[in-house]
Image (cartoon, rainbow, N blue to C red):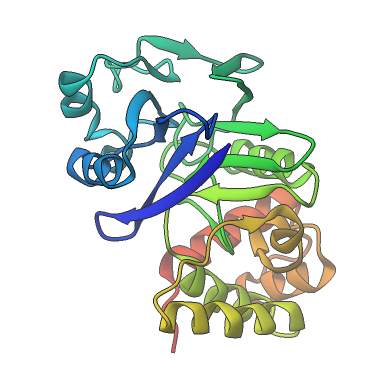
Length: 261
């Protein structure tokens, strides 16, 4: 198996999975731009075997039509009238077979109601393709779901093995960690990570993938049960005894308005 990512559009990453490195076929996750995908396939000498979709936003789906027109491949994804190209509908508990690999389908609503994630667990590594539900250092905006839904999705991902690699869809890490530091200023792990990730970006490197273990230490949206973070949210919002989903909602609203100094 080989997994690679490449930048596209303004902040997106597309993940390219070769299930069997002895064969020159690959699957693309969330191709929001067909040209970028075709360039990568050609440069690597790969043939597209299928398209895997997590949710309906344009920067995850706009490349589907052109790619399917070039090569008639299956399109896997959630049931949604906003993604009519999906011809293999997946939902909670389904298994997605890509060559010799089997991925578990997890429904993770919150960013959108149709959002699903894909979990690959092998003896060597665990990979989570979570698109815009969980970011490195943050999470997606809450466009359609409720705080309770989104928090439930994130807590589900938080419970995965700590070694699980977080293969999300955007290079937002430094901005996310600047907010995390503002929300939990005494968290030394956040400060240390922010310095590391800032240096990576200065050198033109990607900050992905992350891991669930690292996110549990530094991502405020996975730390809604942390006493220090709760205290910070109470101070920021005036809430006296916020429940966990209220902490999440307050954090998400705070992040939506946040501007780093």
